[in-house]
Image (cartoon, rainbow over all chains, first blue to last red; front, side):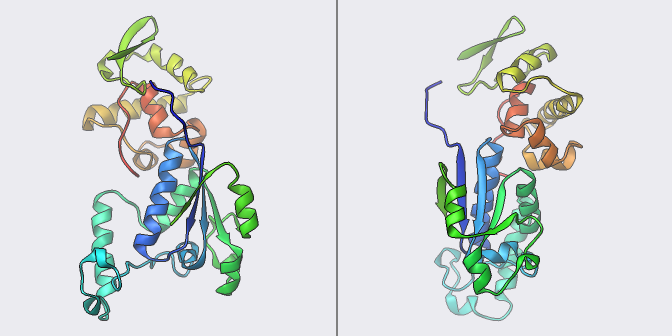
Length: 157
Length: 105
C-alpha cells in the first residue's frame, strides 16, 4: 500500500437551512466518523434551523432559485410546492436508507462528533440554548470554533 | 494480489488489507487482526458485532453500514464507536474477514 497523507479531523460549517444545504454536511460528518476521522459540525446562520427544536423536523428543499431542480421558478413558488417536492425527496432518501434530519443528527452525536451552534447567529435570531436540540454541545464564538478546529480541514457548506 | 498472514496462514487481501475471500477467515485470526487495528482484546460485545458482520455479508454479499449495525445488531451506535473507535463498520469488517462496506451513510 502506498504511503499517502491522511485526514485526521474535519470541521464542517453548515450555513444553509435548506434540505440540500444541510444533508451534504451531515453525510460528510457521519462519513468522517465512519472512517475514524474526528468531526465537528458548526451550525451558523440559517444552518441553525437544523439544530433548532422548532425547525429541525421541517427542513425544506429550496424550490425557488434552484436550477438543479429543473423546475421553473414560478412553479416552485406556488403554495404547497415546496412541501410536495420535499416529501418526494424525503421518500426517495428513505428508500436509500438515508435517515431524516433529526435521526441523522442524533446518530452523528452518538458517533462522538461535536455539534456546536454559532453564537453570533444564536444572538441574531434571538434564540437561547433551550431552543436548540439536546445534541448541541455548546454555543461558541468564531474564535472558539477556530480553536476547536486547530489542525483540522475546514469545510464550508 | 497482496497476502497477509494470520494465525500462521497466508490469506489474500486487497490494497487496504481487507479479506478478498471471506471463506479463508477463521476465528483465531480475529484477535491478531484486532491487535493490528489497535484493539487490545476482543470482548463478547466485539464478537457480537463481528458475527453480525459475517452473517450480513453471507446473506447480502456486503457488510452493513454503521446505521444498519446500530439498528439491527443489538449494539447501539454509541457503543459501536466505543468498541471500534476508528470506525465500527470498517474496523469490524476487517476483523471479521469480509470486504470493506461501501455505503455512504
